[in-house]
Image 1 (cartoon, rainbow, N blue to C red):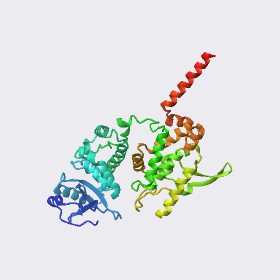
Image 2 (image 1 turned 135 degrees about the vertical axis):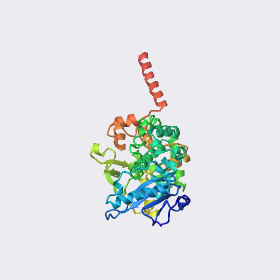
Image 3 (image 1 turned 90 degrees about the horizontal axis):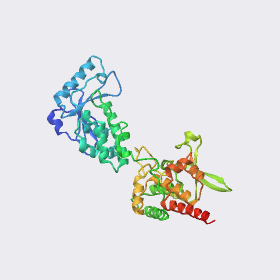
Image 4 (image 1 turned 120 degrees about the horizontal axis):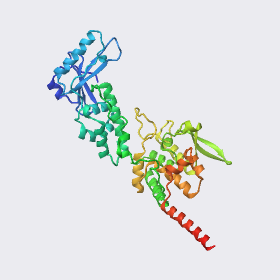
Length: 417
């Protein structure tokens, strides 16, 4: 939106509101480069906008928030920058720090305003709780201890949301260091904070391990069948979940699957289908592509995926594209599976995560004896069979009891001999 020059006063700036259909508006003062930036959340920040040395892109300096900095003070700061330009100096390289520091709300609102509209809406929702608790805290008072204690207290059962919040907080403070006026000794309080959080302490290797009983598999299959008929779930997500269940692959290997990675191959005198991933988690270590040989059930999933492709008219390279196809999407393929696992879990009555499917596949293959440990490790992409056992193998109590009974019986036979 082109800046509209209006004489700025404290009273006028106080009355400014950003329309709901826009993320932010900017209005400039006719007396010079001073401008006021207003977001949909009501945040108002003084800026100095200028051109220097014939540069194509205009420069921009954040002066500070309104009403903490009134118009008269902001006008004086802008005039000091005007004098620097008159002297042939770039104001952007001058050290000028007003006494008033921004709040946490200013930092997070500034971050949200820099994002795409749909992404910004999601991040703004993510920030809602912390802004209610600490939005008015000055940035200089936002410490690692404050963030650590608040996240530990409020995200005990939401580790995924906590990790997402940490990523965005880190990005917000990094952007504030570049764009806003912060204390000279400021250090990003969210950087590498995850290691200090207690909520992640109990996450140990193998925590995704499950060993489903036959009735659990029956419930899973029932949930998948119901999900295919439920329009709120979406066929693409159900196809991904089913292929994960039938192959034991890593979720990223299936969500990024392309049609050119699916290749026919002759094995044992018959034609089979396999997935060949040139880049995968252990490709640097092994120096070779990962091959996933598909059974008839997995091939049927690909048949349904191709039918869905023809039905929707999608012409891209991915087997499992996003349900939405906006031009500004960063990922063309489906990538967040929590929506689908939650829906299928509700339909089946079986709570699970995408990585639980990998573990369930391994345990089922080993429990039924349908493959050796080495074969299972190769198929799922483990370079060491100890990884397959230590990280995913969880023997059920009934199997341990059976083993103890068999050992005891062997001793009884020795005693009777």
